[in-house]
Image (tube, rainbow, N blue to C red; front, side, top):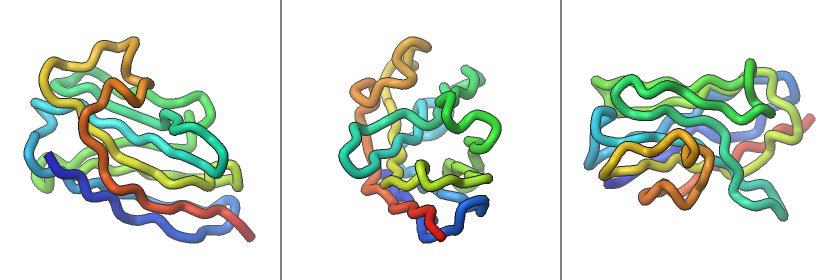
Length: 127
């Protein structure tokens, strides 16, 4: 499985960005997908995820109502639409996937539950 994240950049507070993660080696019926981020001096934190086969979407409280995870099955790509960005959203954003058995609900927010990671894309929110 290979994951290629893109779309990061510098944006002003209140702005928007859309990250993409191109996935090869699994489909959204066989993989659970997640977005995580790691800011300076922070651990890798959960942002959003969806479980395969209609298992639902999940968001960190800090991004609910501002971020949205989606997927394009025809392109095998996952997106993270980020609106109303604030400086605290500054981080390297990573996409991740879990193959094998479907991820259990209680593990969706846990980085160690995912077994493949992309290379990360930097998002900087600053005026």
